[in-house]
Length: 209
Ligand code: URA
Image 1: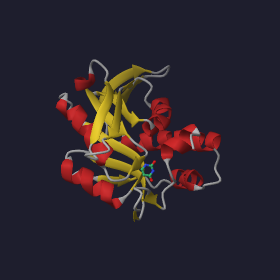
Image 2: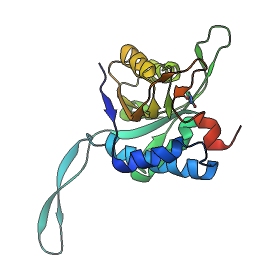
Image 3: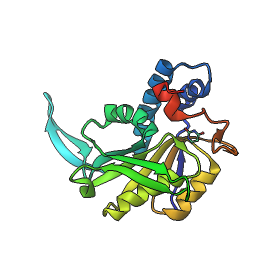
């Protein structure tokens, strides 16, 4: 089963409190989500491999380490995932960014892809799928499926807040995908909102409501 990592660094938890607050306005909400994404990027990259190199310092030769292995790709799920991309790019500026857009078919209630644009070298990259709210897990599962169908094999899922239902759904359908969250909330209400949550992440990020 995929592992669940809760990024409980005090700075993340502090900022998440203001993100949740209904009185936080769009500008501050956007900035806080961006900052938390940067801090979470620090946690999510903790296991990336390093290799040894030597550099000449002004004094002597030093044994040092640099990042090796696969390069990274960010895959925000449209539209709320966009709100975390810049924050991650601050720490991983060389990452390429693909986009996956999904909507829910009103009859079947199944997610349908309406937009997929991936880096040309996506198969060589380790991917971070980004969606702030892991609610039912439907969108995350569908986005991961979109990537797997195209041959991608290595990915992590990064969310701000998850409901237990969403975590379970992703762990069942994609046991190879580790999940990184800032918080696990209580449950999903009848309207599909995470409780206590933060409301609609897309609306709060983009000021549409
Ligand atoms: N999507 C959101 O934006 N908020 C929720 O609470 C659940 C899904």
